[in-house]
Length: 366
Ligand SMILES: *[C@@H]1O[C@H](CO)[C@@H](O)[C@H](O)[C@H]1NC(C)=O
Image 1 (cartoon, rainbow, N blue to C red):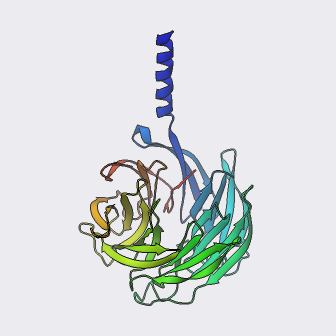
Image 2 (cartoon, helix red, strand yellow):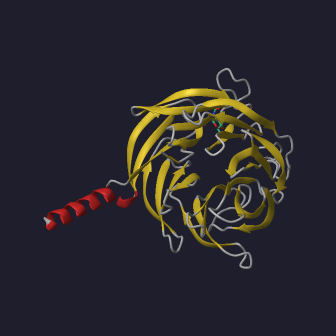
C-alpha cells in the first residue's frame, strides 16, 4: 500500500515535470501566425501546434488569459477603409483557430506596439510611422475593444540622427500603476501620462540624451528605477521615477565583440524576475546582453555577459513566467531560439532553436 502510493506520487511528480509545456504565439511582417508549445523541462523542446494565415503585417501582440483575448496591431499605412491609419484588433480561439473580433482604427500609420493594462481596462497603441498614440477602452468581462478614448499626434522630433529622427516615432507605451509612458525614438523623449477615470491625462515628458533613440522600457518589480533600451546607440539608460515623473540618471554603454556601432540597433529589454539582472537584445551583430543591476554608488549597471544569437536580428524576446527561460524571435534568420537563465548568476545559456515563419517579430505567451 505504502509502496503503491509512493509509486503513484512519483508518477504524478514525473508527469507534472514532463507536462509543463508553455504555449506562445509568434507573428511578423507577413500573413502567418504560429502557436508553439515549449517544454522548458526538456531542454526547451519546441512543438509547432498551429499555423494560420492572418491579415497582413500583424506584428506586436498582447494577450489576456482572463478573457482569452489576443490584441494585435496591423503595421500598415492604411488598413482596409482606415485611410492613413493602421489598425488594432482582438482575436479569440475557436477550436485551434484564431478568429478576429473587433477591428478599430489606431488614428495613425504603422503601429508597432500594443499593451493591455488589465487594471485600468485600457489598451495602449504606439504608432511608429505616424508618430502618434491611441488609447482604447476595453470591456473587462469580454475583453472587447469598445472605443478610442484618447489619441495624440506628436509633433516634435529631435533631428539629431537625421535619417531616423526627422519625425516623431512613438515606439512603445508602458504602464506602472496609474502612470503611463510613451517612448518616442524620433523625439528622444518619454511622454508621461496619468490614468484617470477611464482615460489618460498628460503629465509632461522626460528628455533622453540627444540622439540615443529610446525604444523600449523595462520596469523592475519593485523600486523607483526604469531602464530604457536605446536603439540608435549601443547603450541602455537608467531613469528615476518620482510620482510618475522620470528623470535621466545615467546612460551605460554595452559591448558586443566585433559589432559595428554604426549598424547596431538596440531592440528589447526586460528585468529578470528577481530584479537582479537586466536582459537586452541588440540587432546588427545579433546578441543578448546581460547587465547586473547594481547600487547607485556602483554605477547602476554592469555588463556581465554578451551571447551571440544564432540569427542577426533578435527583435524581440520574452522571459518565461518564472524567469528561468527566455524565448527569442530572430527576425533576420526566421528562428525561435530558446535559452535558460541561471537565477543565481543571471547568465543565459542557449538550449535549442526551430525555424519559424518569415520575420518573427514577437513572442507572446498564452
Ligand atoms: C509591414 O511593416 C514593415 C515595417 O514597418 C513595413 O516596412 C512594410 O511596408 C509593411 N507592409 C505593408 C504591406 O504595409
